[in-house]
Amino acid sequence: MAETMDEKIKNYRTAPFDARFPNTNQTRNCFQNYLDFHRCNKALSTKGQDVSPCQWYQRVYKSLCPMGWVAKWDDQIENGSFPGKI
Image (cartoon, rainbow, N blue to C red):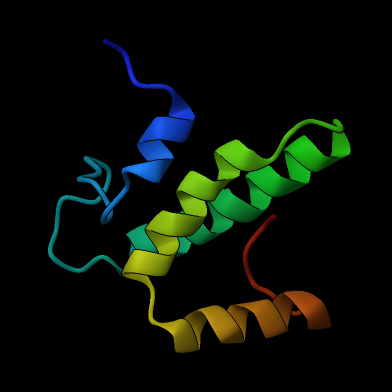
C-alpha cells in the first residue's frame, strides 16, 4: 500500500537521510530545507494552491536547525536582509 503525503507527514519523526548531504555536519541540509519550505510556500501561495505539502520541509528544518538560527533567519526575512534566494 502506498502512503499518501498526509500520512507520511503525520507519521514523520525525524529528518530522513538525504543523499545530497552525506556528511555528519547537517548545517547545509538545515539551511536548504529552510529555503525549500519558504520557496514552496511562495510558489504554491502565488498559484492559489494548498500549501500543505510544504509542511514536510518545515518539519525537516525544525528537527535539524537550532531554533536560534530559525529565529534569526525569520527576522532577516522580515527586514529584507536574508542572504538566501526565496
